[in-house]
Length: 268
Image (cartoon, rainbow, N blue to C red; front, top):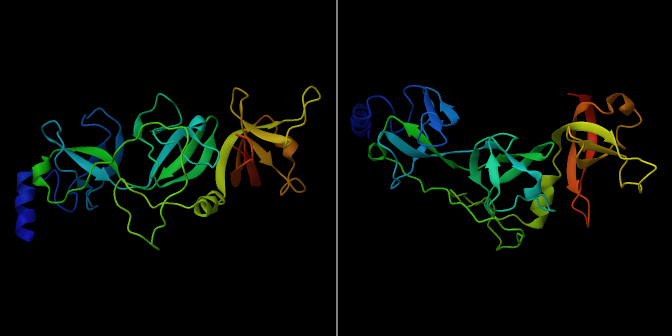
């Protein structure tokens, strides 16, 4: 094994080894040195596994970059049960102009970590495809399959066969989650950003909650349940300001709306 590693190191001219990076090695979104860098592998860190059988430009290797990855998806791709619709583009930033890391699949392992206006921030805990310059795929000893993509669907079934306890995840195939498991994940408190606004108005029917988070343009993307903090927090000092709230998001039954049960609030 030592001899093979030494031979591989010589072949790759120090760019990559079979196990450990010998220099700072950027992993790109595409086989193009001008494309976004998904992660910088530092000297001494483990190199990602290489995907064999893929056609890449000379000098590039296709790799499976392990998660977790911070990604963003437009709120219109979030279903009533807070699942991401398959086929939705997962961006590297909260703008449509930012690069798309991958497309959502029905088996993705994702966790909602925040709301930013019209965007939901997610943690994608599984490998994605990246590209490393400085090596040919034949020079790497380990292989991994490529991550598949999916066609956009409006309705996703939450059903599926049961899985054993602590199953071993495989690339491109996540653990099936029951409705109870999804609800348990959704119950974890997160950070959310937006403009604090009142929903009360004499010219329209009373809303289910008196406060909401809005985008800078005034579009509501979540109601706020402030019962836990109203007695001790001067909420009026935060009105019409950019705020960061900490709480738990959940869907409002029979609607497309989301409400966040707030545990704390502060100016951004």
